[in-house]
Image 1 (cartoon, helix red, strand yellow):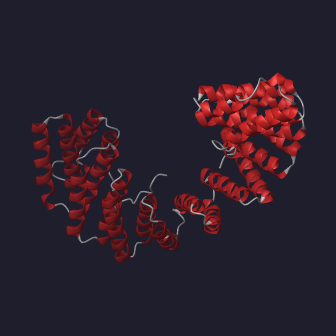
Image 2 (cartoon, helix red, strand yellow):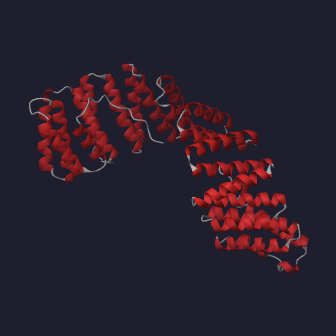
Image 3 (spheres, helix red, strand yellow):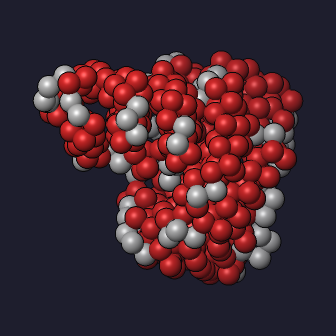
Amino acid sequence: MSLPPIAALHPDRPDELAAGAAALRDGRVADAIAAYDRALERLSADGQPEQRGAALLARGLAYQLLGDTSKATTDVLSALNVWALVRPDWASSAMSDLAEALSSAGNGAADAYWQAALRLAERSGNVGLQAAVAGEWGRHAARAGDAVTAVALLEKSAELGRRAGDDAIVAKALVNLARVELDSGRGGHAMRNIGEALARDQRGELRAATAGLLIDVAAGAFHSGDTAHAELCLEQALSLSGNDRQIRERTLAALAGLARARNDFAAAARYGEELLDSARRGGDLTVAAEALHDLGRIALLAGVLEDAARRLTESVVIARSLSLDSLAASGSRALAEVSIRRGALLRALGYAEQAVILSMGQDDLEACAATLLLVSAEAGRAGLDDVARPASDGAAEIYRLLERDDLVQVLSSGTSLPLEGAEARTTRLEAGLEAARSVVNPAANSERL
């Protein structure tokens, strides 16, 4: 998730200065120099010292990036001379523009410019500007993976923002700080900062960013076994998602998964239907296929086989049209389970074999082998040798491919299949199925969590 910007109190910039900063940000150094050349041609040598100093300093930086130290030095010295009488807050603002451009381009020199911007802001006595510069520097440090620097700067930004009485800056700093803390495993600290950020976010600008954080907090709580806290966070995230379709859909998918984990199929289906409706209204076929897959799985778990077959079939059709092979394979395995429950074992074998064709990764193939063993065991009990044999052979072939000789041995043990009695054959297949389940849980691999 991207971190919300904490905009410094930048004065208006001429278009050429803005274009130069954008070019630096994109790594287009020659375009940046051309933009600053145009800016300097239009700026008066006697007036507008703020803008002229900013253009000179920025052009000097661009020359430095190109390795032309002579021109770089000339421009930087000229900028300092022009800025001798310029207000520190303006200079700080311009310096933070350059620091942001360098940070976005991944340039290691950015910290020196951030430090200069912060010192100029401190000289100006403008506490709000200090808070904004510290917050922006902290945000970029977080994006660069420097958690220690990010925490120190974002805490400084929040404290300065409180002193300045600027709730917007405080809230943004706290949301960014919460992200760093959450990524560092400090969920408790993150939740406290999220709470204060929500209380200060009077204009609702951070609702989507905060909702995204709460989804991640919920995931951590779920994996630690605290499902009640996970559900609370997700419900709050849903209420904050507003018109942000992506955040809303992530939240609905997580709520459906949580309901499914506690066997509340009615709630899981309700959230799944909301997710499907949102995806269809937004024209997102990928999310629609995933939602249909999950709704089909939920219906299968609830024993509503007709609805399960309908949802899963639609999911597989869409997934195959979009080349989402892993999702199509998972849907095909689920359709095999539906067919087994219906007693249509030949059809179940067809779906299981289709899943193998669509599978690419090891996890998918292991799940396919377990599904084939399930088909084989059921066919063995029903005395359908023409279904049991190819299903068992298909599973064994997958395990050979995956170099799982222990499972191949279990499936190949004993005399040949035609000479065995039905009871012995079923016993061997069930032993193979149990061995497969020790490697992979078919339900867990078929379901999206």
